[in-house]
Image (cartoon, rainbow, N blue to C red):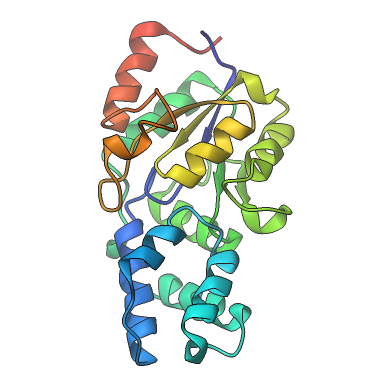
Length: 222
């Protein structure tokens, strides 16, 4: 099968940020006198930040006066991290440059806020390489709903069934598949394993390098 566009997730797929999000959440939660449960953390992986902030407030009411306040606190901590804390995932830079060199229509479809997306893309020097970047904060529903993937496909002018989505999380994979896209999942091993996707997606890869190799070998872009 050939595709006409790539739509990238960002956190945990292109940038190695999930452990950093986790650290920031732990610091905030523990500063309010709570202990962060693994079950709650796992629930939030791939979720839109404002939606997860509402869940955090229900479990940890002293964390902030509103979900908006909690989201703002997490976001500011992420934006103020030393630049070296956020790094590209192995193979991400090569994959992004490959797509740009071939002129493949491409976009980011992320659960992070637009501020975070722009900040991380800037840190990676991908501003021109991925010119279209979309946050789920501007659609009705976050992942696992398909809204952000459908929005990105509309913006780049490619039918969803002709788009290849790249994801790392269960919620993101579900969102891409619900949008009628083919999804290649590269599990972020900081929060999941390959076996976690056995009941979700049969196209699971160990690395972005493996995906890039398949792109070159099978010439899967029309």
